[in-house]
View 1 (cartoon, helix red, strand yellow):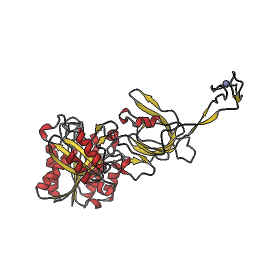
View 2: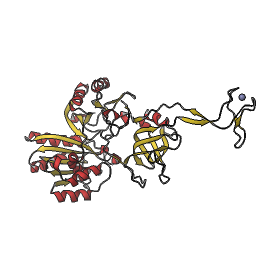
View 3: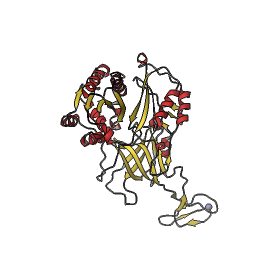
View 4: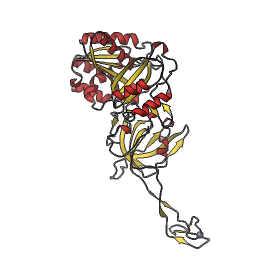
Length: 432
Ligand code: ZN
């Protein structure tokens, strides 16, 4: 078996997409008589999505002579990659052990690419050490993802599917014609085996991209056949080509633990527990923030832990209401990317809710709020002469319940695991 890794052939402005390049390599190899086992769509660190759109790398597992694989892969990348965009720096790696027995070091490299930002120099050392064939264009940045894609099959064990339909080439860059009602109906028929096709809360189709790339739509889920049934049922402009990719989308493989020094790295995505330390605040643009101190529940909150802000940005829509429902003292476990002092929330688990609050007592005769009777003097009602020794504890109504809350499908990052997939450690409140 030969493994071909490809990365960074898409362009923000030029409109190519690495999935289409990998699909084209697989098709050309098939035309030459090779058996293509599968094509992996591997999402790398989502914290660098601003640099490489979607930050996807691809691997083709194919039964073919590595020399043929190299020739086909490099010629397809040369033809299709948008080479005049200096932010597009394609890389190709051809390796020939079976994908599940690639060297341990290559699998570890793949694991690290979903949480860190790695250096092309390290990729070059590894490919040299293991005798993999490589090709790069531009500054060679794409070698990192290409090698990660080669190691991915051994590195990860949770896999989902995406069935991608591609447009006819003469329509690339123009508005897409997809019947929204048919997408909603098809998504309903196969939910929850198929997820994140639409956002029912916002009444939005989310499987259709807005970029000028060749993708018409992509249907994601846990069942490849169900994804294809949804794709078949969507009424749209002609589908030129299609392929079902095996992916690490929706698996939370990007989450890391915070180290004991409480030091956050920029653009890493963490899962950590802590306590809410202030009231939620809605700021300009509709973004919601709430202060939070990391620490282990059941232990004292470490004084050295820095306060971070949990952030729910405007595009997370109704998820912001869940964040606005938080109160000081609530204990949470949160998942989010650290950037500029904030954790951009993907989901959070309610571990313990504050259910009482201290209030100034009400007068038992007139029902009005009592006034302070002076320092340490308690409270009293001047009109009625009633008094109370101190504040009283009253129950607070909480909308939140224990368990996991998440951003809606429209705001989901590719690699973030939707609650509907199950396997969580607490009750879930899935968005659909
Ligand atoms: Zn009174």
